[in-house]
Image (cartoon, rainbow, N blue to C red):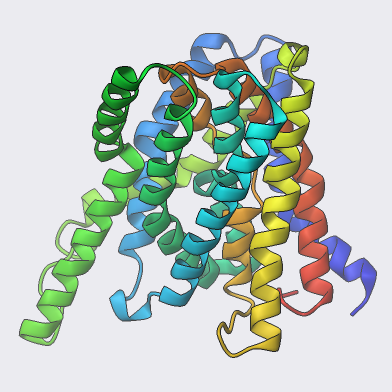
Length: 342
């Protein structure tokens, strides 16, 4: 396979994400977009567009029998492994309690919903997006619970920790992304029940309520462009002073060590054992889960739980910038190895 072809394919996959982020950054710097737009756009994307995207992605799955449980279980196990390693790393990186949980959260919590799904679509098309969506759906509750733990164990007294934990469990249940996923799962259950009882689908959202399905799908279509432009508009590099050690460690973990562990172990197990058999539709999902930058919602969550919100914001900025190179390199290596479609 020619190197030029690999580089061109990888560039075509990564460039649309980079360009939309850059557009947001430039428009914010020249004053075309203001703070109010960025704030409302971020809230609209998180509470409306991304849940619609998660719903449509889950709703589009053929059925529970098509779910790759091996991919889901593998990703969940590696997330837990990375969490433990990140915990050790955070303790040794800084003595500031408010920063340890932020670093830990950055280590295991990636931006699957926006950047991950966009990249999976570019690399593997519909099948890769379906796998990424279901992996995201079934690992999202785990990541949210681990985020609560990460942001609680180092700050506040015991009573506040318990109260914060209770409040955050409630917020997890109210999380728009999880609600979108749960609603999609309910539709899958209804579809499966109809097929079992009647041998066919009698009633469906896309059939009898097509106007509603079309509206939700239109909101889904807005997700990538809006959220990436808003993400670019949020970039602010001036708050890095005094936090460089934590930023370097968190960034290296999120975009170098985590993808190396998550994707590397999968490659070894797939090639040298019969435990896993991942192919060109599964590796885009692994890149989405382990190779994308820190989740944008992590900064808001850190601030709400008494952690260093400025550090969390900086980690989003620097992992987003740095992941452009690491995602590109990852895609090139996997394509050269024949593990991604070209």
